Length: 296
Image (cartoon, rainbow, N blue to C red; front, side, top):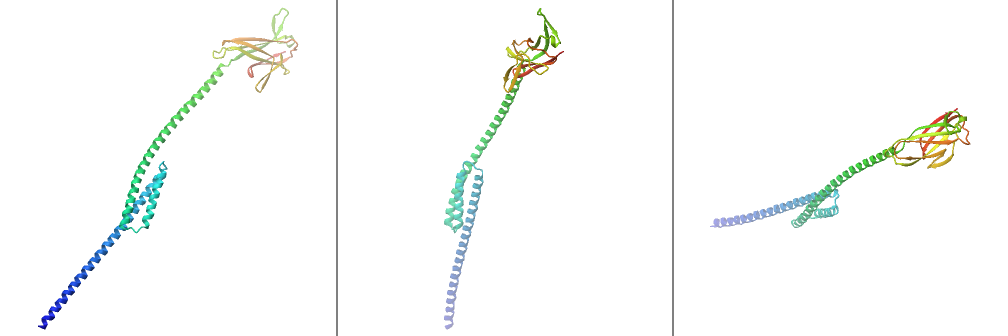
């Protein structure tokens, strides 16, 4: 009888211990599960924080690149980049719990949406700028070609004007001079003797020129004797910086056809000396013909 009571007590103790063990095991399992769950949540939150930080850095790098292109949206891009930089700084300071990560993820999504819109607009501006640059370069090229063409025309016109000016000048040719002895009858006889000379006869011709301007042409004749004296009127005319002392002038009616001209220098009051004489024909200040002759 006593043995039966003892066995019953032991069984009761075993049952109690079993229940306690089961409860302990259940409690330990729950604690372990909760700890693992918490660790998993912490790891997930940590990973989420790192992921969002990486995405924000990529967002910032995108803005950096776009800002370097210096378009009309540069100020807007800089302002949005500042928002990203501030969010990165705030996120690094945060604990990274689920609630705060949800808030940061929402802010990131908004910033990313703004970035896509701004980058798209920035790309469109770049295309427009590139198109305008191409059009400008084409315009500059066309203007450059036009300027070269105009410059060529100007040079051609200047050369043509010079050619016309040169071609329109009259040619004084066949200049010749004779010493003349005038007889009492009025007959003129050529002589080479200085003491017999009464006059000097100067003749020249103007060549035909169809593009020259017709009308009266005035020429200055200068005769210099062997002693370097200017004979005749000895009048002086200034042409710019040039001063010309001449013997006489002659005016020719020119109508674009060849014409011969002869003039006389009277020897009254002049003692023609022996030696070489020089005859120059001037068109204003320009020497157009010259010759020389000698008297014995």
